Length: 200
Image 1 (tube, rainbow, N blue to C red):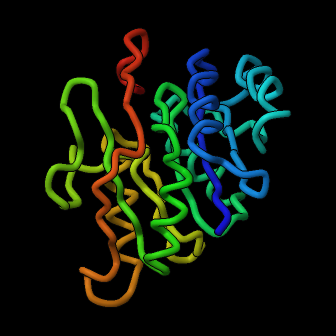
Image 2: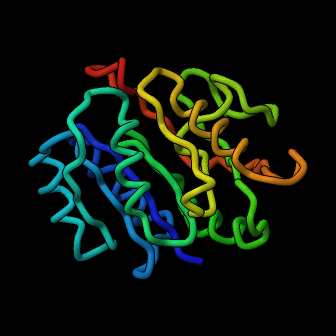
């Protein structure tokens, strides 16, 4: 099972930490890592170039919006070509072997949306209860079959991570409990960016 990891960026230097975490999470040569700039991002492009010999990363210039990276996720998601989608922000990081374990969990749950957990710096582990609601789901937690017509859209709003997964789950067929595999494993660590709090 191959993975596409989509990372929107506004050129934060923390992108280096995020990409290092992708490397340590178990990305394989047959996977793809799509870093999508919020408009031109020469710093991000240079960082991707530095990692190009270590992970299968591609830098793309996306639309200039300055709006939580949602348009950049849509842009990258439309171009993602591997069987399964994952997402990360440029100021966050995957836990060690997260992609390896996500790959195995997705293989055990074919055709289902897998939602892992995230360690939030101030709120602790998200989710504690398996519910799709604002504040209980986040971008970094999703492992989704890359079936284009069944994917929702990231909308330009705070809480867009909730809106995307809610839209996506509602496009899946079958009983609700068969659409999602709630996975009690911390996939990622959230690092709010103090100099850019509205986009963290």
